[in-house]
Image (cartoon, rainbow, N blue to C red):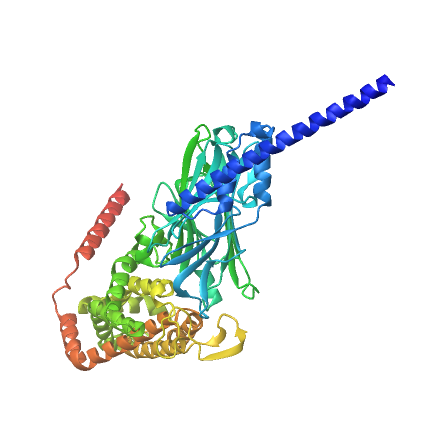
Length: 623
């Protein structure tokens, strides 16, 4: 009985002790909660007073993180795992950075750009222009701690936020975290981005001195013509060691390329806009991919561009920063060049010669004219006239050479009558060349000026489709000089031609036919290859109509003006400035002169080399 009473008393004492311990522990928890609330209030008040918006939730998270793992009775590894689990379960929030050029929304999940709106620009159907659409991009950092983790699976906590700056934090331990710091200056398309590693030397695996950065973007269609936009879109990249910019994926359904030399930046380039990621320390290795979507894609996505790249880390340092920056903006030559990163070279203006003409002659002249004239149709007209005036000496030389060939036609006819047989073709050719030499006429005199004009024509061909200045600029019936103009939608597609009729392309073809017809009527060639007239007068203009039907209306308009002006120049020269009878008399006088024709220095050197060769052959024969 006594043993039974003793047991009851013992259990009662144990119960009293447990109740007392529970009451004491509860008081201690309440005390810590009150202290945490005080810290939260102080942190929130300090943030508001300093002008930085810091939410109460962020302050609570920051204060709670100050508790030592030892006080909670868990190991540092368990504490880290708990923090990451909480980050993965937290709800996603979005934060906005904005200036007069762009509006960028940053997602807390992965601390990555979630949406990018370019102000003052619109899609071809007058909608807001988003370079990055919600849910259509991925920016992920894969790093090795005690496990491989992806930041796109984790929510970062806001530390500080304003209209122009944002700091998001991913905490691993009490004194170890990663800050993603964004900044956006007024009047800039460049978004600053830094990764700040604090106390991460004990967290990151030192055997892995790099992280993997994966950037994937579904690039939206923004322009009217799918094929034209696709031809000028792809992945652009620049190496750290030189200023050359290369492209991947243009005019190919899909493309992939690996690199082992350090890249300075990589960009997802469209016809008139680009998204570019710059690494101050470079990307030492990685892989770039690009794939185009079909024209009928329901989401109106042009292409999927991706970059999977390595980023070097200072895993031996406690605190270090990895600096990046984003460019989200237009492919405007002077805007791109202002950032000093060779961004402007993504604009396809041609190679060394053609690109030089575009960058230092055409673009400055075009922009100078736009300061005084608002109509880009008139600007193209004036630019065409200026180019024609500059190359008018070449036009004059070409016409005079053709005129000389034309007035010699009676003499050529005499040679043809003298050597009518096929076996006398060599003699006829020698007689013709002798006539040209005695008259001082060069067979290449008309071709050379045309060849010298070709770089300018090609530079204009590269300039118009890539010029954002023409984008959505209307003229006459055309609503957008950077895209094709359409006066009739066919409702079906003709191979190589398209599903519409471009009036500028048609008019350009007609003007080309007229110019070719005039040229053929003025040619004085004694013999023409069979079908040459058909090819030059009919086939070439038809081919150009097919080619230009889907290209920039501004380009077709320029070729139309160029042909009309050239026709006018040739007509005026023939009517008022050239007397072909007088030219014929001068050439006949030269041909009948007993004096040998004056040879050029090149011809003299050529004759000397020929004589030396003949002398050497005779000496060898004697031996």
